[in-house]
Image (tube, rainbow, N blue to C red):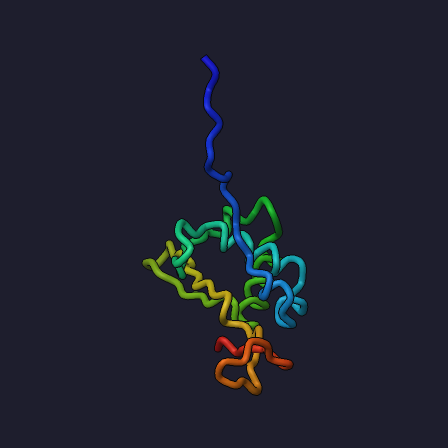
Length: 125
């Protein structure tokens, strides 16, 4: 008996094209881009905004110092926030992920009913 092929997509990490085209994303180092994708990969739902991510999971991709610098870069751009939870010895980082934290677009002039705008950038801050 032949097995039916699944109609579901394999697991993937979506990244909006507006984010990839933004100036903030272009300024990031490659390590920061990989760190952002690793954090986004931890999301279970599209609307989830916080993930727990220990460095031990990122150790196969980059060095501890590179990870730290990449996270600082992401925080400075506004794509990630970080807070710590835990007790005295075992603290875990909780990262807030936002694709709208960085300045991606800004709308300068828009007329109601107008279908195209010459300068069509939107500030999502």
